[in-house]
Image (tube, rainbow, N blue to C red):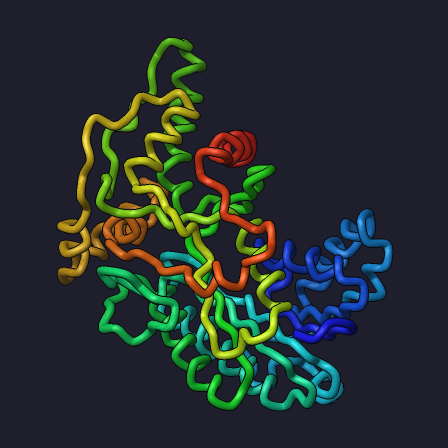
Length: 374
């Protein structure tokens, strides 16, 4: 990417990753940021800008709120405003997506596929476009067994939730559009809280496994501090890798790689290049939290196959209001996929950006979760 003035259009700018990316972009003094948000979210963005002013006094002059809706073919509410923006936008960061493991197929297609198509149509009209930075997910690999290289997409994989499947469909469209548009694709792993503060915006991913035991521990300690908390079994055991990644690493990679030359047409896996196993992950958190480690590993492949049988998944989903754990979490403890990160590591060379080891920030994730989710 050329240095100097940078005009960026950003979707999903109020999300967990998006908010942090906005801060990174503000560090580059000549960057102008246009945030595409629904009109109903204007007040949320205004509050975000106010908080940013403590660090960036010029934030109100550099962050511009644009009324838009990814479900609309025009992307922006005003066609006049869209035409004006297409004359000056140099880069597009498309982060907006509907992420929810239990999302319906219809909602997932509207948000993740149609929304991406509408963004691509807008990009085609941008006169000065240098690059579209499309944020996908490692979940596009589905249940692929083996090493998933960054250039792979169509590999006969199956999908067990609508989020992963529709992000896969969206990336197929993005890959096709890359034949005519300059596009870089980024695939984060399972994003957890900040590695320095522990900050996370909601219970998600591995938090579904951890938070219930924090609640049990809080309850038992209120009765007696000597009552132990047992984590009975380790789903996935030593066979399945835990592909979690702290949000700050994802944002640092997005920011750094997006400013490099030669990224068009490449895909970057944003995850820990040396992931721990599910068993190691659970042992680390047990040690940090003071829980008794699992007595055994349990391999969840049979559960995955059972959930694919007619009616079984629906039955399991009917219990979700009781367990507060989405059924789809089972699949992420069964997929034997190893993710190659060669492109990412190549483009990070010369920087100080590295993915921290889970042992160094597990305690921070626990501390933040205890304060906000228990």
